[in-house]
Length: 404
View 1 (cartoon, rainbow, N blue to C red):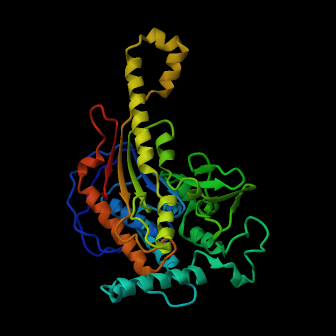
View 2: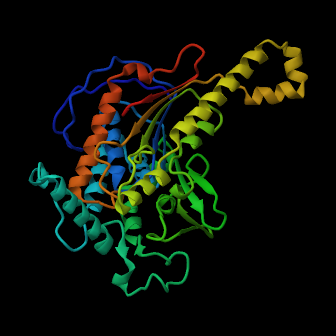
View 3: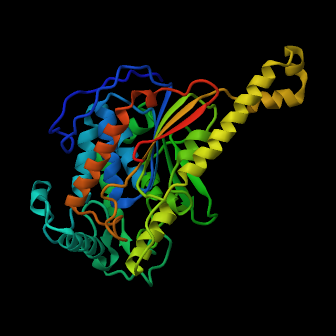
């Protein structure tokens, strides 16, 4: 589905999110037939993806395929499950809801100025406090401790109860904020990944092949032992990030292949500093475990697409009479491809260093910062309109690192 790239030149306060930084206008250009938004898992860091989406939304770039893992699946559902004019409001409402604890007063979005310039040590205490509240109280509209209901997580029986928290509030939140009829029939392809607990295999729930509901989204983010497995048609699923924290391969490997512009939005950075203490070790372990192997995947795709295109060129040199009758040529026809891909890669690096608890530090001050960083990063990416174009010449696959 082709689209026109129209840059929204407005800057300043918006109804849907933080103030948008001024950025260069990009000339209108015809975009590829397939525009994919790929969203990694990362818990509270997922507000960064909302900032990225806001930048795309304001620029008039409309993805027709969104694939997500874990918190990326929640953001995917909120976008695809609302009409275009409602999407930013739905994302804002969702993040304002889940950034509230259950008991103690929340830091509101209007109070960020109190925490500006308070010093690194004071900010570390604020972040630790918000993370502690998330563990003890849970987050409104998201999860609650089982102990509140007189349940003991260590003696609970059954895969849907063996967890520290219950996610029943999230089902209610999804069903209230997401129109699943629109999600399944609204013209955006949706793919969310989850792990079959029994087989250990990563599977994708895709609205091109099945009807999705709140269970499929919740399953993609059911990270054990915090959250319980989700039962779907007699099978039980955990968070897809246990096997692969990015659905990038799903977008690249699905056939038929199409010329594609892909925005890959990562919340964990594979590269980092050497840890100096046990807290640093815990943080670095998470970064390595959950970071996407995006460079590995894109390198493999680049090589694979090169050979698929080479095969296509070779087939053009073979007479039609041979191509139509020779079984090897017929097989080669199925494998050959001359499609082109442009991937814009964004990795959250700005305020992602909150300590080992950064993925469950849902405080509103941090949420606002994550959001703002995503908006700024996509703004820098869109200042390069040539990145939106498909590669030319012999190179069929190109990657642009928007946050290098």
